Each structure stands twice: as structure tokens, then as C-alpha cells.
Length: 208
Image (cartoon, rainbow, N blue to C red):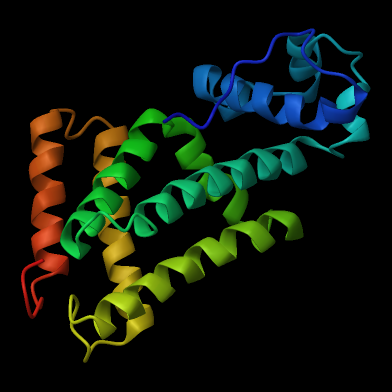
């Protein structure tokens, strides 16, 4: 599921212009890249005055942080949907988590770059609002890792934080290989995801 939404120039009123700007900016980033986005071009895209976006975002960086924040919200909703699905076995739950993480990155490559890249995070450019949304996502990964350890799915002897960082780093690496076109073959991605699953859950006490 892509993290963007279709919005026409006439689809907003004053109460939701900010969300319309974020959606439009997300679409522009996906199609033209971060470097080609500007508040002026965004205003033209939405059909408002050139000064209108500045009532909601003081500059481009603040706008980018708002776009990234929506990306984190979208991914968190996907992750929670997977982990709250009682019909999934623990192993299938984690399989879907891995594959849908890679799928989210593949469907939203520019947004994914923005969420996890240096454009925002290097040079302390992230806003407090973004950090308040992004950091709980990272913590959620740690909490789920601890749960897997308690269930015997992952090695209990490993430091939870480090284990979460390594497993996330593996998924991020696969996502980057896909986005960068190094492994563009879908079958290779599926096999790598399955391999990652087997490695992550190698210490399962029982098969679900």
C-alpha cells in the first residue's frame, strides 16, 4: 500500500490545507525527488497562493519532516495491523512483517529515503514533531523484539536493543538493495526475505 493519496486542487478547504499540502508534497517527492520540491512549486500544485504553504511550514525542511512523519505513521499502522492479527502464527506474522517492510520501501522509495536518510537526520535537521513520531516507531521494533525473545522465537541471551538494531538493519539493507536496483529481481527479494526470516527465528523452540 502506497503512503500517498490522490488529492485534486479543489479538494481542500481551509481546515485541511495542511494535510493536502503534505499529501501533495509526498506525491511530488515520489515523482520528482526531494531536490525538485519547493514551497513555491507545492503552492502551484495545490492551487493556492505562494505564501499559503508558509502559514503551515516555515521552510522546506519543516515540510520534509512533516512528510516523513506521515510516512512513519503509515508504516506503524501496517506493522500494528500485522502484529494484532490473531489469525497469523508467530512465524507467519514475522514473515509478513519482513515482506511488507520491504514492500513499503519498494512502493515508496523516495519517501523511504526521506524517512531513513541523511536529508533530515544528518545535521540535526529533524523537527521535534518528527522525532515524537519516529522514535516511538524505533521503540516499537525493540518492544516486538523483546516479545519474540520471551516467546522463544529469538535468542533470549542477546541484548534486545542490539538484536532489534541488527534485525532492522538487515531489513533496511535488503530494502536499499531493492531501491537502488542492485537486486531488482522479485524472486531474489523473496528468497532474501525468507533467508532473513530463517536467520532471525533460528532459535524457535517450536514450529508454529
